[in-house]
Structures are given as C-alpha cells and as structure tokens.
Amino acid sequence: MSFDMMVFEPSAAPHDRASFMNWYAKQAEWSEDHSYDDPQVASPALQRWFAEMIQFFPPINGPLSSPDAEGPEVTDHCIGQNVIYSAFSWSLADEAHAKMRELAIKHEVGFFHASDDPGEILIPGIGPLPSAEKKWWKFW
Image 1 (cartoon, rainbow, N blue to C red):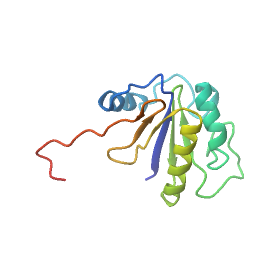
Image 2: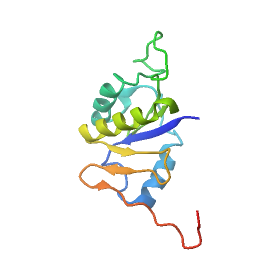
Image 3: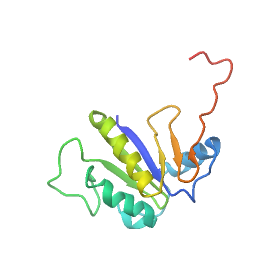
C-alpha cells in the first residue's frame, strides 16, 4: 500500500468536489494512448513540477529513472496529459505531502491528496475546494 497524491492541470479539472471526484476516477482508468512514465506527455506546467519534484523523489521507471536509484524516496509517478499521480512510501508521507503541495503551489498546478478522506483538493486561483458534508445518517 502506498501514500498517494496527484497534481493536475487546473484548466482540465472541474472546480467542484463531486465533479472533480468523477473526473479523478476517469483519469485513474489510465486510458490515454501512451506510456504513463514519460513526462513529455504532460502539460508544460506539470513537466516543470515533475522536473523539480524528482530531485527529491526520483522516478522508479521511465526515461528519467536511474538504475542506481534506491531507497524509500524512489517513487512511482504515473504521468498523464493532465495529471501526475505519485505513489510514495508511507515512511515518507509527511515529507512527500509537504514537498508535493509546496511545488504544486509554486508551479501553479492543482493538488489532490488521494490518500485522505476527504482528500484536500487545491486549485490555483480558487484555493481548497470545500469538503462534502456527511449525510445525516452517517455517524462515523
């Protein structure tokens, strides 16, 4: 099991939580016609985010991976045209969260904390999307 987060192209994503979650589920089908380990398929803003992020959390596969890379920092980054989904080691959850969110803000891409419920959705120029309220019958 991994600690999962995603950055995304803000212009491609819906700006309300329910629609965003549906869009996210569609993105996670990985149905685009390309390899998901090459940053060249991503938007320019996501490419800039990725170039900086891999200085701290290098990719486990793809053209920028290194056969010498090892340790918990090595991360599985799945790269789509409008999203980069990163699966981190739980031992680095706090560091990964802080760095991923910091760089998302810096590079003006969206941020989604996929391992949290409800996960934070941060959209540049809009801020965090409000959490959906629990139904009245849910006690937990």
